[in-house]
Amino acid sequence: MANTPSAAKAARKIARRTAINKSRRSRVRNFLRKVEEALASGDKTAAAAAFAVAQPEMARAAQKGVIHANTASRKISRLHKRVKELG
Image 1 (cartoon, rainbow, N blue to C red):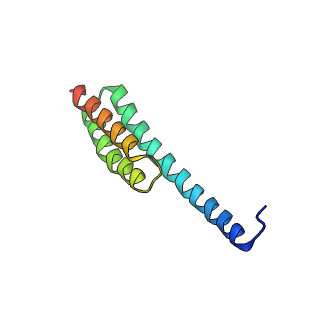
Image 2: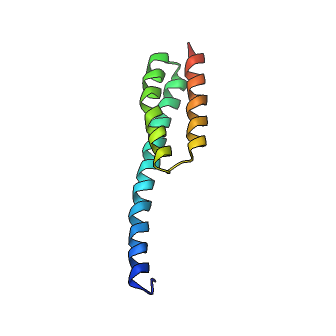
């Protein structure tokens, strides 16, 4: 339990931020799952469309600090390569 008013406020802020970050991370995972499913099905147009939606979502998560920028870049790069190879 927080001992001072400032510590109590910090705890409230952390709880709010954690909820937002959890939501963003979940959103990114959902978009990545859609790309993976499209790749697994072998549908190039669906995979390309899903990737086009997932890419800015990953970049936004990196910008907001939910995931590391290099991690986002790496995942985007690898997914793009797989989508290109599908055809």
